[in-house]
Length: 362
Image 1 (tube, rainbow, N blue to C red):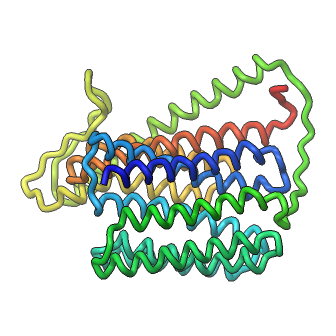
Image 2 (tube, rainbow, N blue to C red):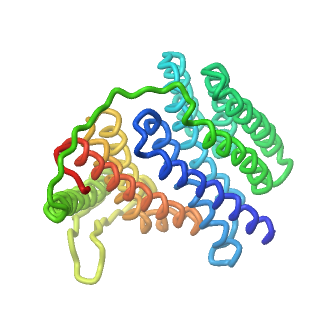
Image 3 (tube, rainbow, N blue to C red):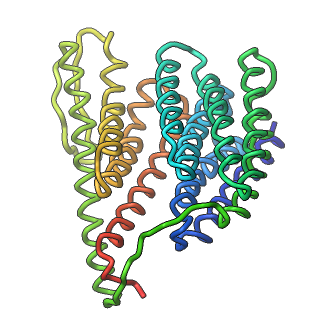
């Protein structure tokens, strides 16, 4: 198994490296960076798998197939959403949006109905990826090969998931094989992306200003914003604990700060039947608020939603321990929380540059 951990880690590192190179190679090319920047987000998922593989390899964490399936299903879920975005960029067809709605409704039904939710989420994600591969194939001659490889990746991964649902095979090994095929897709995508039929009409006129003044202006704004979002997220997190505890008839008071400790809510209940919901509410409500802001907010609010989700995932590790999540899941949520924070900072910085094009770091 150690050899598999090592090989998997190296494969995940290569995949994440290709996505990183995709970003740095094309982020200034306006005619294609609408899709390359989104595709590059997948880097974080596979880089997380790389870290976890080596933590399992050196016994810093204990490997669990159930935990791996849960983490891998989240990575594939994000990957599928981004492929939706890329496929929609080709033709702007409503059918792609209908598929997205079907996908999200199906995942919601799975989460509510089935115990083996990780395998089912993976199966339906790969099925939708197979359908999306036809958008690559039919879009143009330049993206046809990419579509064929993506279809192969989806078909083989689907077969593996059905075998796992029948308790046949090892999830980690199947995932490794799928990743190697996905690696081929990324290589084709990296080679062909500049030939994709995408156009951009965005033009930015830039004049120069002193570097130090621009840096200080942005830095102060971002520091103030991040601190405001942090305090707000903690407030929503703790308020969620308190409100749900009140619904269960518990006594509660919120402690904003106590020396030597993180902010927390002190809750006293005679009946512990609602302990799970009280604990989980603090983690869930801020995520729902972040998702609401992302889908309904404008170009500034969306980066803030990433910061809210990131801070909440990092702040929830004690709640996850209380609920009984394994160390693998808790560590993965910390990684994903850090990723959301990083992306939020990048998107806020990007918003500032785009909204104030008269400034320049040149």
